Length: 183
Image (cartoon, rainbow, N blue to C red; front, top):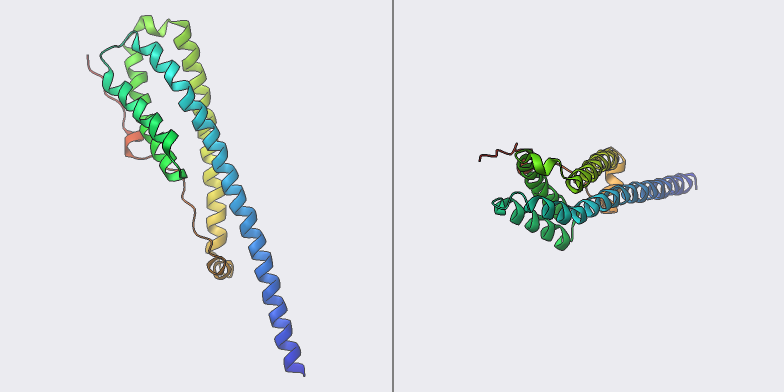
């Protein structure tokens, strides 16, 4: 009878641990999803601001068609993206082209003096700061989630409940390139 009690005690403890870890995984998974949605909102705002910004610059820099086309492609890719990874990729593409666009604007003093351009640029800088903060928060949240599901004994329950590592938001090589503008 004592052995049956011990076995039942162990089973109750394992069930308690499973419930506890499952609840923790759900909590952390929801935090990751929430953090991603915060990035998504800011990226959407950014992509919605871009057409006005591009139209303002187009009047001054008509020969920058490649940059404008790249921005349009990145915006289209973002709108058609169905996964966080695809949205990250579209964001990285846009970042590279925005760097070029800002470099182009430096070559046109009359553009820099345009109040619409200044206003749009200020809004874009503010959005970039919000995106940077949201990315940092997302990566911190993903790191906490990933550490939790990788540590023992949580890793056993993470495997049982099919929780997988989440991907950090990283800038790709395109976004890291400093634009070169030659006239």
